[in-house]
View 1 (cartoon, rainbow, N blue to C red):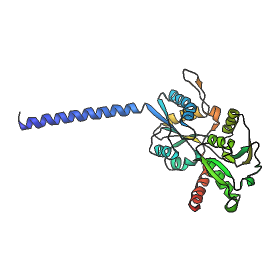
View 2 (view 1 turned 90 degrees about the vertical axis):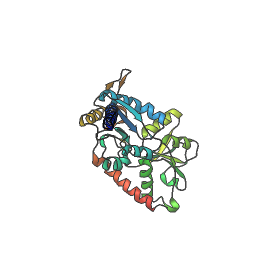
View 3 (view 1 turned 45 degrees about the vertical axis):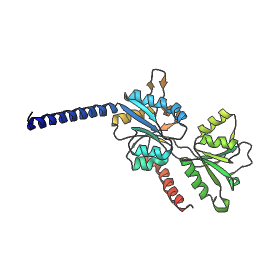
View 4 (view 1 turned 30 degrees about the horizontal axis):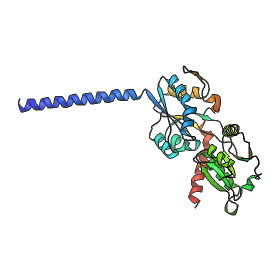
Length: 288
């Protein structure tokens, strides 16, 4: 074989390999578009997220004619990082993340949970009758949530600082705090979900008493990555808002809005959250 023929054959082999490689890559990319990922921020245990949102993912998939895989993360920082890197096609995010994920990150809101206040509760037999009675005592708060930030800023505005300060202890979720409240490890708990408290009371056969309530504020919201088409986003929004239902083969999955009160999103609704976020950054900077 002449040198010219040798290099011609070698070039042919290389080109054939490249064609196979890029052909395989193209097919793989096409396959990936048939699977959408639905991320839920870690506001409860992975098991509870699976139980609550797996039917929602199934409903999304049925309506979009896609496989929708449910996912979360071990912490809010990791979840936020995955969202910002585009790991999720659909996500349920906490209200305070509207700035990095929606305003700056470009995700498109689909619907939001309606506004409710944050509250502070104590056990029914507690000697604490009003917020002032918490001075020098411990208030448990769910970490990484607007409840934590809003209650701390509200109490700060009411003068519970310095010698009048209330001690704060952070928990992974409201349920963990309520358990400690029953054990007298904390004196009170903060929560934004009356439903969560009612469910805990029913489960444990106990009663809590509310001693404070803030103004109502908007809660978690569903968002979609811009790579989803406008039609897909509209389909998801209708499902979330309760304007549509899906037959899954096992039972009819109602839209999330049927039992969690999701409503249409308006950017101005979250102005109060944006203000709280700005204040918290300043507060955290000035707090030793």
